[in-house]
Image (cartoon, rainbow, N blue to C red; front, side, top):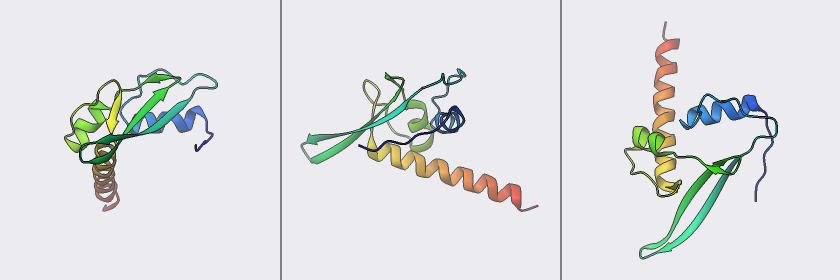
Length: 104
C-alpha cells in the first residue's frame, strides 16, 4: 500500500489529465484511489487498474481511446498496459505542444 497526501489543487490537474474531471470541485477530505489488480490469464498474469473518486469508480475510456486507441474497460477497470501507453502518448503531445510554444 502506498499513500500520498495532497490538496484539491493537486487532485484537479491529475483528474483533468486523465479526462475524469467533471467540473465539480473536490470536497474537503476527497480521495482519489488507484487500485492495481493482478488477474491470472491464459497468457500469464495481467494487470488492471481501477481509479475511484470518493469510492466511486471513474471511467478512463475516453482517456484510453484518445491517447492509446485502447478498448474500454469493464466496470471501471482498465488494462494497465493500455493506461501506461495512453499516458506516454499524452506526454508526447504535451511535450510537443510546449516545444512549439517555446520556439518563439
